[in-house]
Length: 227
Ligand code: CDP
Image 1 (tube, rainbow, N blue to C red):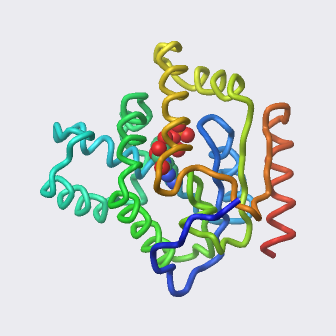
Image 2: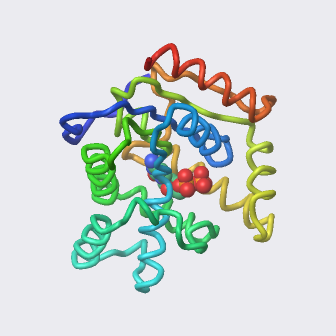
């Protein structure tokens, strides 16, 4: 499978990075959190940055399908101000409508570049005591950190992913099915950095695995590849 081109300068003094990609509800966030705790690394859920941008666009009554040059400038400025310490602070980030707007915005090249620069800035300036990062998303293994020491593609059957999402939310389940299918389709088919499996990714299908089994498999791979 052909890999997307790296379009940006990678951080100069990259610390250890573990990269994880996968669709919604695959379990990548759970595995990322486990690896971060086990190997004493900071965890960044890059989806939250796209959700932050989605929330900003909604709060400022901007049209995600029709952003002007001025909107582009203010959104790019906003991305530079996102604080990694409060990435998950607003409960509205977890709403379906935020995810839907995030997924539309994630198709825009200039937004992806700005988010990637934000990620590189974090990794380039780790807080005191941080020796590395676990970063999960859709293009982390393929486009953002293709040189990560361990790369994972986490997946699961669609109905299992849907059931997991429905358990996590109080929102109407028929909306979740439609929205998740729509986001999956958009993420996999967009022109820029679509969700694909990196050639050297370790694939974990969590359909029939317990959380413990999935995390154990990932952890073994990290021990072999990164330490
Ligand atoms: O919770 P869910 O897995 O559905 O989504 P998320 O990880 O919170 O990400 C929200 C949206 O941001 C996704 O549907 C993608 O469109 C986009 N995203 C992306 O394009 N690239 C990333 N590295 C992370 C998220």
